[in-house]
Length: 286
Image 1 (cartoon, rainbow, N blue to C red):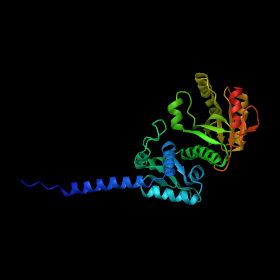
Image 2: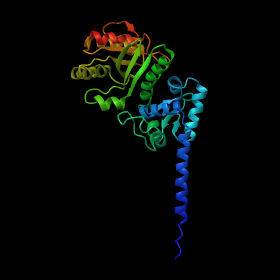
Image 3: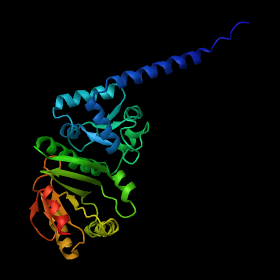
Image 4: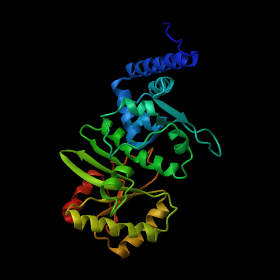
């Protein structure tokens, strides 16, 4: 009895599957430890620009661009450039499903954003993309400050997704972090304000933080990053009137160029500015 011939289409599919598996293995073999760190950051925080990657992870712009090209070539990341009214935007990197496979076990479900074949399209079309990038700017600048500091360290960087899964019944901050310096540390919630919300709504968010503080018995400063000095001044007028039950501080400016670990935080109901690590005294005071 002769063995029936395998249809050509099935042979092609088998070869294609084998090539696909070899391609995945080849891609994984080209990942460096620093590449893996980048893939983990993208798994947690969805999108990073070349400028943010340079500040947070690969200080040499030429090397950063090269590694992004390699990761894109082997299919671990995808990139896009949003259209700007004038000039050109940097590359925005997002994880592909293959890239997500490369960090399985390195990112838990609480922190990992879902990755699908259309993730790049979905992210590129986000109406709040500027807000997401602004949040990531603050934390990327803190990471850069830690690298340039003798003893500074960004110990925690949680995304909005991770915060919502943990505290969503009471608060939904844009991020949560822990900064360590000189043997001290301070936990903080970050609210990144682009100026689109009424300030009454911004101040109202503090009720949730007060409820969280009462429920957990833990106090962490709520930090607002504001888009302009005028917005900051107006918010402090409202904060003084509200006399919030949780410690609050604000900063303003371009987070890509301002060092968030420095003396940029204006303390509510005080008026003075302090370094990030010195906000730990607000916890003690409360």
